[in-house]
Amino acid sequence: MLLLIVEDSVRMAGLLRRGLLEEGYAVEVASSGIDAVWQATETTFDAIVLDVLLPDIDGFEVCRRLRQAERWAPILMLTARDDVADRVRGLDAGADDYLTKPFAFEELLARLRSLVRRGPGERPAVIRVDDIELDPAAHTIRRGDVPIDLTKKEFALLQYLMAHQGEALSRERLLEHVWDFAFDGDPNVVDVYVGYVRAKIDRPFGRHSIETIRGIGYRFDPGA
Image (cartoon, rainbow, N blue to C red):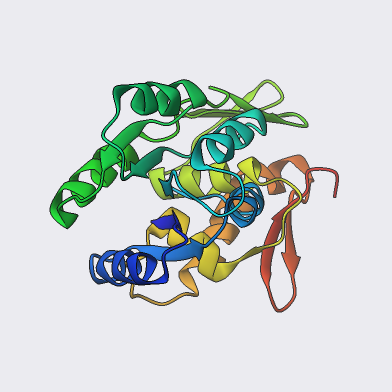
């Protein structure tokens, strides 16, 4: 699981990062609102811990910009002000939960676990790329009119590749998001499962949708 911490206090950001790493999360840190917007639009996070008080744009504006950009990672907002109006403003901007400082780290963990289980609040129910249609809710996939049977892990891998069409995805990134951060097996498992998926969605149709990027990983390109 990959988290983004948006916190301008070096000490607080360090404490949160260290604690979350110890709990098995992968963590990136942004110290300003502008950096947070850039990082969260360039990278897919499983959840975002967002401080309201930032040196440039505040957390409310960060949240609003991310939702306008259709980035739907769950957002937990942090504030030093226990004010109902602020909580309402944060939720109206698109935040999923709110935590007032000071807080117990165990409560932050519990709220993050709940948000991660819930997943993104809004995103297309069905992913369509070229003639491939993947329905996460029904756990079905079709190429044209032909249904394709994938295992749970194959499905998760293809879903992540399709959701990031055109991006060069490293094996490490695929391991973090499809196998999870705690995976400590052979990273070559990614290559093995890409082969399985290719054999089902491409080979029978004479297509080459998953491109190998030498030295990096893979890219989903249905036009290939």
